[in-house]
Image (cartoon, rainbow, N blue to C red):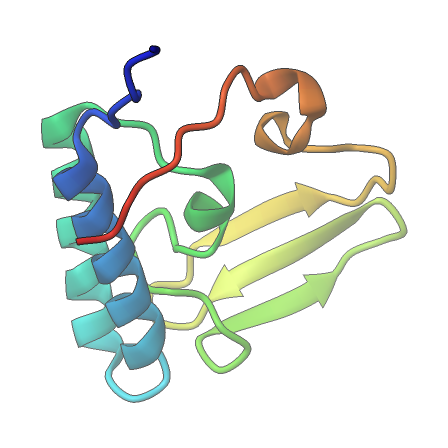
Length: 121
């Protein structure tokens, strides 16, 4: 019989998930609270030395850690190859390239080594 694999830092991932959801819910109602939850998320991630999914990183402002929504960020198409996203709270600008064929490393099939099922308590 093979042993069932366990996920290291399971509590940390649950905490990060909760903070991300809380930040997204508060983004339109209270931007300072959303920023506070985002800062705590970054602190938890750094202390536990775990990687956050790039899609979560793209949802947050890199300067003030506010969850970016259409109400909290402005999307400015520059040309056919890039788009500029500006945070309305702190004014930080981030440019993303537009490429239909580009995939993040976490979305590629070769990036998945194994899957671990996590049972909920």
